[in-house]
Image 1: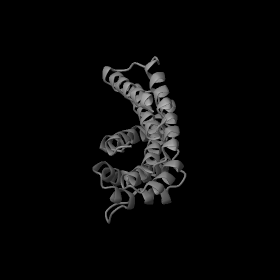
Image 2: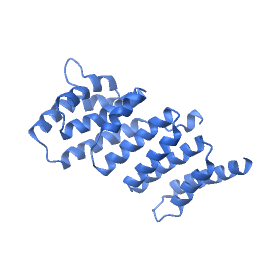
Image 3: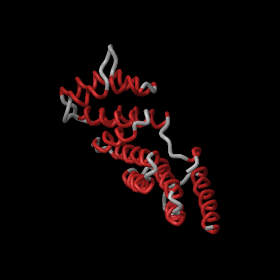
Image 4: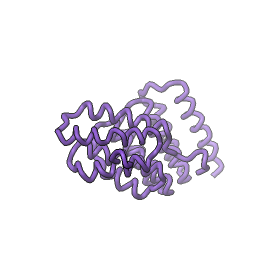
Length: 207
């Protein structure tokens, strides 16, 4: 797959993760340990949002990092959240195999978090040239969270992963199923999928 078509993690995703984290903790019945851990994790989240992933993971002389939270608050909601954050941070540092271990271990439960976690694992598998595995995770992410915009994003990643495998037929099936669904597709999204459909049909004919 060409570099400009690779499925990459970006700053927008990092911001979305931070916003989701806020609502996740707001929705939970937090224990005393959760509250202590959350207070200690505040500065690490700030580093994460700023793109300083090493400081977010390891902490600094002034504050603790995600690794500290994971090791010292086991079994808590805040530990699960720190595990998720650690996986995303490691992915941004291109430590993909290590990132996988944390993301696979993270168990948060909220559909939006679960979908982002699964999609991030898919992104890593693309980077590791394991596109067959990536497809599975993108499809799972789309099935977990049905928000139209996110659903379209996950499915389009699956299309690109299929394309990387030269499996144009499967990519076209994903596109067709989405376009024929009852999802409210905005004009730009519809156009994006339609253009990809035309392009892949042309490539399939040339095979």
